[in-house]
Amino acid sequence: MQRLLFVALALLMCSPAFSQAPEGWALFAKTKFEAKYNDKTAEYFLYPAFPAELKALVGKEVSLEGYYMPIEIEGNAYIILSKFPYSQCFFCGAAGPETIAEVKFKEKQGKFEMDQYLRVKGKLKLNETDIEHGNFILDEAVMVSK
Image 1 (spheres, rainbow, N blue to C red):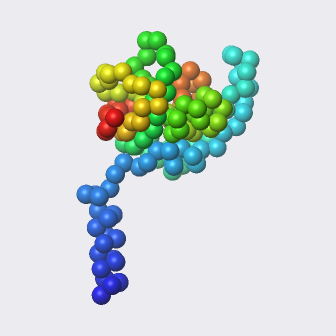
Image 2 (image 1 turned 60 degrees about the horizontal axis):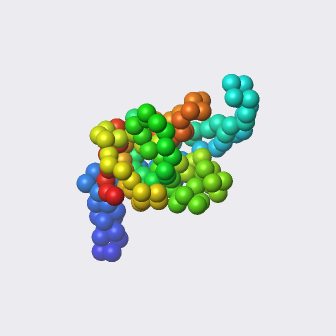
Image 3 (image 1 turned 90 degrees about the vertical axis):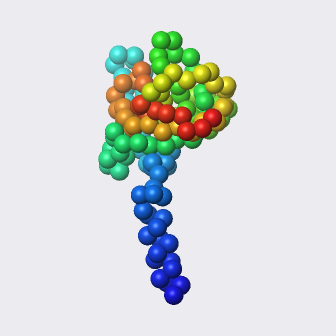
C-alpha cells in the first residue's frame, strides 16, 4: 500500500498542474567559461560553452529569483538580476558570469532598489559572443513578485 501511495504521489507531482518553469541559476551553473582575447577591445573576456541541456531551453520559459543590480545602462529597457546581493555579485568579483542575467520586461516596470529581491520569468535567450550583453537573457519577462 505504501509503495502504491508513493507512486501515485510521484505521478501527481510530475503532472503539468504541478510543473513550473525550470529554475535558471542551477542550469546556468552548468555553463563552462573560457577566457578568450577580444580583438575589438584588446582585452580578455569569459566566453560561454553552453551545455546541450541549457540550449534545449532557448525560447522556453525560465524562472529566476534574485537581486536587482543598480547598473544603469541608458536607453536600454532591461535590468540586471543577480543570484547574489550586490556585495557578492559578479561585478564585485565574488561570483562568475553564470550568476547574472539580463531581464527584458514585456511591460515597463517601476523603479527598483539595490538588492531588492525579485521573482521573474521569461523566455530564455543565450548569448555566446556579444560582449555588450550578458550571456543569459530573459526576454518578454514578467514580474512574478517583488
